[in-house]
Length: 88
Length: 238
Image 1: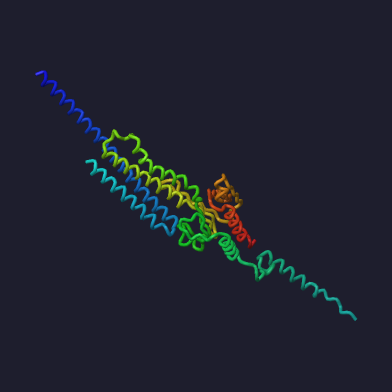
Image 2 (image 1 turned 60 degrees about the vertical axis):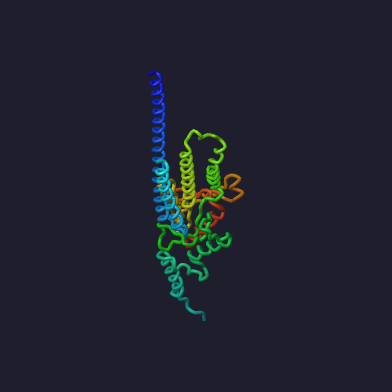
């Protein structure tokens, strides 16, 4: 009976550690997702900034810079989705 | 027998002089007829621009930091007959700092591969960390480039204009008409400024904005000379 008790307590410790690891991993995952989401907001602000600059100063490179801004936003969205799927 | 002196004949030239004197109070045209060969204000400005373009290599590079009469470039606040004569940005040498930092940051994760700094993290998180790292470097580089490309100094045939985009969504555009320009000071600072010929042009005006600072602009002495030529052209009618 003593052996059964020690065996069950050993399983309980393993279970606790496994749960703690899962919890920590989920917390880290949430932080990463929040970080990548904030980066999407930053990329959106960059697009708005480029639009404002284009409106103020017209240059031959303005269309190319706008395309770069949209690509940057698209890349940040794709990165967020990748993180969401990769860590799930 | 000599002719009898007729004073009326003497008065006629005097009356014509007084008529001219009266007319000078009402308008300048009758005082001295313009010399047929004196150039107009627009012609003087054209000459100043032509002189500048002769002195410099005319830069058609859209990334150029010193462009005389840049093509397909205008401002939303530009007036009807206003033409951009000179467009300046900070000298490219001043941007080397952030470029070197960005390149170093790109290669930094490869240095960490030799140091077991993040070995306590699962392998999946390594990939995510790398992705986030490169995204941050990309965002930093884009912001630094936009800050250099769109912070411009412009001299038109009517005004001097300073466009500043200090941060995300903060815009400051200062303008002053050329006839409000009072003083121009040129400063070359540091050994890089002397080697690569860039410096600060400080323009003091009598307008609402009393000082314009064209910071780290290429060929500051030529900018000063050009603005002085434009001012001379403006004052040529006085």
